[in-house]
Length: 365
Ligand code: M6R
Image 1 (tube, rainbow, N blue to C red):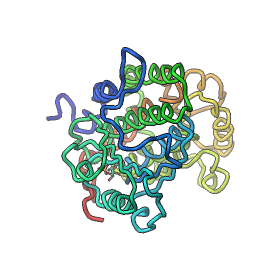
Image 2 (cartoon, rainbow, N blue to C red):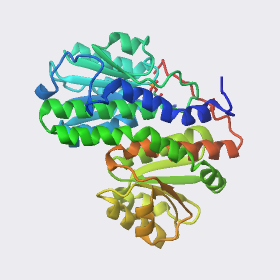
Image 3 (cartoon, rainbow, N blue to C red):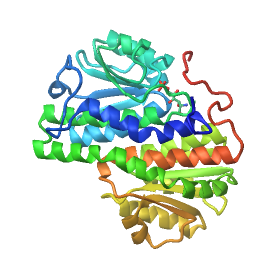
Image 4 (cartoon, rainbow, N blue to C red):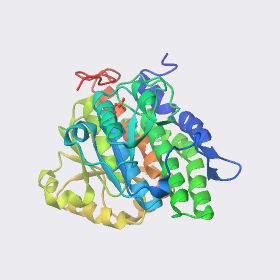
């Protein structure tokens, strides 16, 4: 049932404040401002020397964001790869180490094969999955569910934001176990998490603006997405979302990589979508925006009021997001990124819920 929406994807984007809130309620002890995981862990985060993450597609990008979180919050080194590589690369994995798999469906063939490989190496396995009855959920030693509800649109939206939510809660729990964050810092992070559903609801209000912008994006043959830090995986996710439903060629890059190749593509025909909340590395991203502007590139900034006031450049559009704690920014910024892909594809008359050549769950490799 699409409710009042034209497509499942639209419904699922709009549902995010609610399902992220529901997921949070499952992981957060609101009264005490701390994380309370729904299940005991069969391993100790404090004893791990590293964490291996594997997943495919959008779930992989959620894992890439989580790498930043686990490394900064819990000082836990993270190794991450797409599951189709992990399974055949056969990486050396320590006995009693931890492999984290992320999957909406819980049936993705490569992710499942990587999980089985990790288990055979004697690793503990933790799954962040949306379908609790899935094969991956059954085969993992511990499951941390995303409570997104059924996701019907082939393009993953609400499952992604719920994955990020669970992963941040896990990183905080890991930080506590490893003694890298004190109670006050944990409370501050939890306070930031609690603001997320409201901020996502506010971000949805940018929809009319995004819709106007999407008509411009629809004319492009190629689109570049740039971001730094956790906005880098968001750039990759933005590009994937756009290409899978609009069939416009899109690439996501770490903003700092611009000079190492992609800058050669810049001209007035290639919109450059810059994902940049006003965080500690914002100024670095501004210098990349200047490089784009100097070559006649048309910039779309997805940022906040502070950033918009600071950069002083002409943009094709600026989507002014509410102020967010930079730690939780990827969860909130998922909204405009998804809306832009959605409206561009709808404007182009594409079948957004069932894009060509794609299946909702990839159960064969
Ligand atoms: O069910 P999974 O999360 O394991 O699926 C992984 C990918 O196939 C999936 O995220 C795919 O990339 C989506 N179509 C992206 O929107």
